[in-house]
Image (cartoon, rainbow, N blue to C red; front, side, top):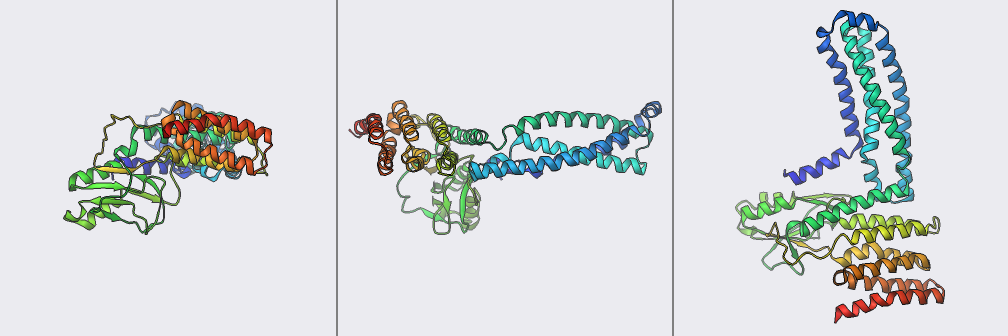
Length: 426
């Protein structure tokens, strides 16, 4: 397994809450057991001064307190996850569940509980002896400090966790990482591919039904170099795949010595799951943010302020990307990859809002302002896509019964974008 795929799998594993909890619990057990190893090195006078009951009392307090705190923390986390899923978008849930701060706090609580439980059992059985209790006492003091720090961090985490602003911050950060990754490795480091594959190319199909979550482009390039292949990747991250849709087309596969093994190795470079991943798919992050705005525009919520905030965040994301430099040199020349176009990103960001905003003048006005900014900053890249969304805004605003004065104001703001499209066409 290559480092790219291993890194992706590790990130997914670390994002699961039980992994860090288990790690802290193991540390709690290990800390209690270390006392047995250090027991011979502790002088007897230290054990006498501490007394026989001091360590046991501290461990009893930690065990009782941490059990209650852990149950409360778990219920609070579940409420935050439910709130984010109902009021923002279910697509944000993996980012909230995988939050490092909340996982560390919860893991500290459970680790402290396990440590105290193991310590109490060993004290009651007399395993430690007088010298061992000194080590346990010192370790217990460290655990108390860690718990106090965790409680202070927990208060700060709870002030934002699951709130709309917190969800949007996480979604924007995840989408930005994908956008920056696309800027650093356009076309996954390969060459752009449009149109049909070569006639001599053989298509590869997958029996799985789902979404492409990750593509190990480095291994695809290595396999192409080793076996004299040219690969045309049709299923980029985020693509819905099934048995009737080719995921890639390969030239030179018929000349390979072990076709079946090579085909399996090529297919193993794609990680397919039921849901999208944020890492290599900027569209997924953009669509998730748009879903938050759509929910805010629903009659049940009626929060145009959140929709305008999302438009501003989408504009900030889209200005971070643009056309690839003409002198760009492909790092993986044997890999040809489908393009994520400007139109794809602009449609994902703004087309659903143009429809759902309807007659909300303030939201449609903010949408046109964002499109206007894109056409001024990067006219050649965003001009045509922005003009398409502007026509959607005009269509839905008119159908929704917006006031003539407001329609006229929107029309005047659209002039520059429409003219930019004409200029680009000429």
